[in-house]
Image 1 (tube, rainbow, N blue to C red):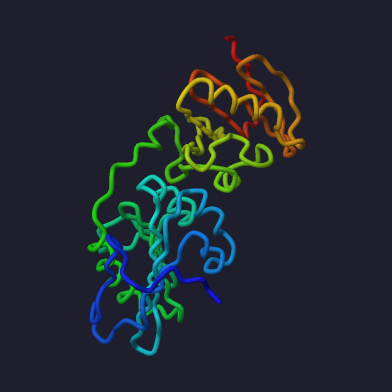
Image 2: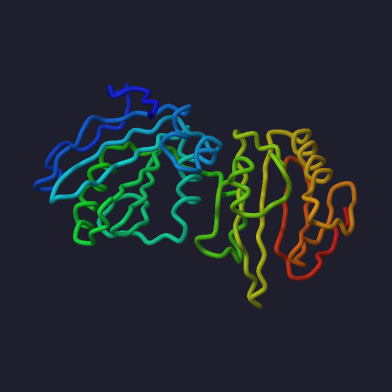
Length: 282
């Protein structure tokens, strides 16, 4: 049995659209609300990623009409950065739908929405393509009920030059890092589910590409500790080629190269390099 937190409206919770948001459509059953401890019962795999990123609660409202059912899954996250982090990891290559006043991606099976500290799925269980206008109407109504969130600045640590559009991600621990690259077991960068790192793919004018991971810390001591943890616990399938006090170079199991460098309050890691990089001269 699923562990519901409550079916009662919580203070400040998202107000779901009422009956008639689209002609002939109405709510089907009460709102279901799930706490972090119940998320494993709702998501068939992947709950760890939401929890790592900063999950607060999930509220689900189903709607019935035209012989079908559509559900709204509203994931309230810790803050706008956490919501953006989940959105980027879950939506893949964005395919925005017209007429929705919020960042979105989807099709007639599922629409993902991002606004404020909410990440929202709208699921069409029937898969009927003719229900896309209903999903769009529902998305507009949901978005209008969510207040604007704070500006997210965490991706600003990534350099803009040569970045592959649509490749940037936010990371907050081992599960989100795994979507980018395997550096080692556990929380290898010591993000602890509270620090945001960022990653993106880069391609220079000649077509050579690599992935950059940038992890900022609140002070130099934290950054230094995380760098030492990374160096001493690097995945055994990576072969250390050269190392200094502030950086090291390695080769991974695919024959590609990587370089990690600690400087001040941040660590920069470049991976999937086709050629062995030079070490820092610091």
